[in-house]
Length: 210
Image 1: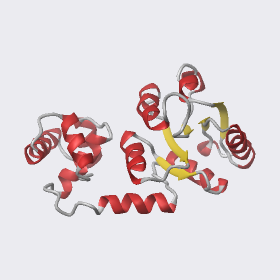
Image 2: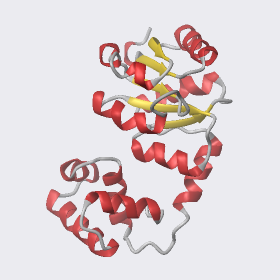
Image 3: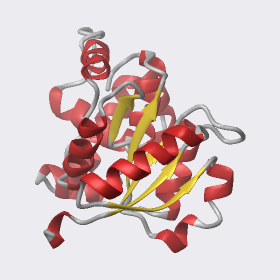
Image 4: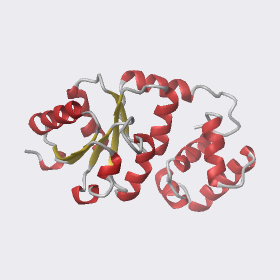
């Protein structure tokens, strides 16, 4: 077994058949192992730290906290974890909310299991896998606002801000100085007529700027 591809998974999904089906498939047909499964985030949140998963497969519609709201909480508990959404929901708003909250991948429940195993490999390598229909909606949403007042670099920075990156992380990711990031952020605030990160994110999402 190739050690570099091994990873621990947790599945959070209220449908028992789906939970058991994916657990069986992942454990028996891939180099990954499902270390635990939960029927809701509310049950998982107190125990998941012990599991230390590398990847979480997460449903959206669950009893209690929904999957979209669970993403930031899971990222807070496990900052390095990759989250793949597996859901029946394919509306643009929900997809974009999930990605903005920190999901690494997004698939609908009719996706063949082999594709999910490929997706696990892809997120572990830093990719952002999605079902074709989901990817199409994301691309459409990105093309929605040709009148954005922001430059390409400002849009990049705003996108990283919405993903929770701070100035130094943005500087590292874009290979620029922290001071340069600071200047860009100042320009973004001026162009969007906002005074805070939270307002900038709100305007960006409402106006499809990222």
